[in-house]
Amino acid sequence: MDRKQVPPAPEDARQGVNRAGLPTKPELDLNQFLPYRLNSLADRISDELARMYEERYALNVAQWRVLAWLSHRDLLNAKQICEATRMDKARVSRAVQALVDRGLISRSPSSRDQRLHDLRLTEAGQALLGELIPEAQAWEAELVATLTAGEYRDLLHAMRKLERQLERIG
Image (spheres, rainbow, N blue to C red):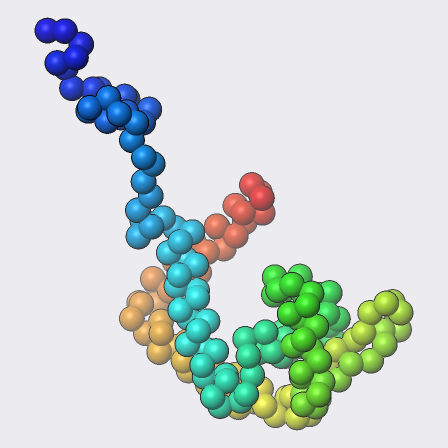
């Protein structure tokens, strides 16, 4: 039997040649591609939360992230918020300005670095978060209610491992 009559070996297919000897196009099943699935899920979750923030509190996602980080740490500057949220400088700057204008955060020159401004929650910002955070936590609880406690713990553990791996390979 000559070579033309023998079906190509699997390694030939991996090299990008189909049974007719023509180049195959690379395919990617996005439903099985982790970066796509994680990004898609994160976008859907963020969109749902953004709808709640906007409807009930007139906040966009960037503003909510700034407030959330300031609830977590008493004092931050815009550069630290950029690093923590992975948002670009312009987006953080617009969010900070909107929150200052609404009286939800205060901005004052930093005593440590004159190029920076310290950001803090105001009493109004703390009061707003006193309402918003329990709602966000209740929404999250409803989302993860489909998971067992072990599945939830395993999910968080797997995410931490992937984050550490990204730090190593990034």
